[in-house]
Structure formats: C-alpha cells, structure tokens
Length: 120
Image (cartoon, rainbow, N blue to C red):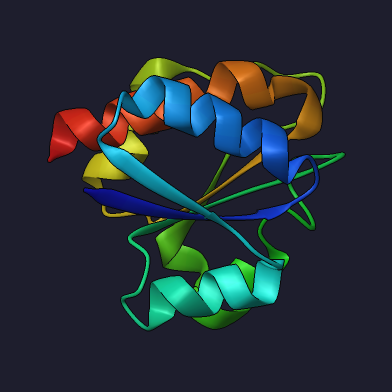
C-alpha cells in the first residue's frame, strides 16, 4: 500500500483523484502542508502531493524546506500541462514530493499515482 500525504489547496480533489487512480493500492491522508511533509520525513507516508495557485510556490515550499529541494518536483505550473514522461522520470529519480497548480489536479494526480505504482 502506497501512503500519500496531501496538503495545499483543494486537498479533497487531490484525495479523490489519487484514490481513483490508485484503485485500492493507495492510502491518502489529508493534513496541513507542514504535518503532511513531516509524515513523509518520518516514514509515516511515502509521498506528498500539494497544490497552489501557481504550482511552483506554496505547493512545495514547506516540502523543500523539510525534505530538501532534491526530493521535490513541480509537475505542472499555472498555464502549463503535466507530462507523463517527465513525471515518470521524477519518480524514478526518487522524488517524494510533487506540486502542481490547482487547475491541473485532475490531470496531474492520476499521472503521479500511476507513475508511482508503475515504479513499485
């Protein structure tokens, strides 16, 4: 079971998209950004997903501070679209925190979850 901690804006939408894409293979936990990232750091969650309006700022700012820049990746900024090949590459590189703009949640989250499941 893959454990995903969720923070940022539109948490419930992220959770819904992750649960649907995970098809029973993921457990999602909604929390504040700070608590969700601490769960990943402590090994109580495997991944962090967060969203903000821009996709590049608040979605990952706490994660970068706690987990380090090398463990985080923005997958879709405002006005952009997520790319499956880029997300798969980031998962394979060992990234554990992913940020996106709120407008891309329904597209990006399934790509992230599918990439994680494919890598396991």
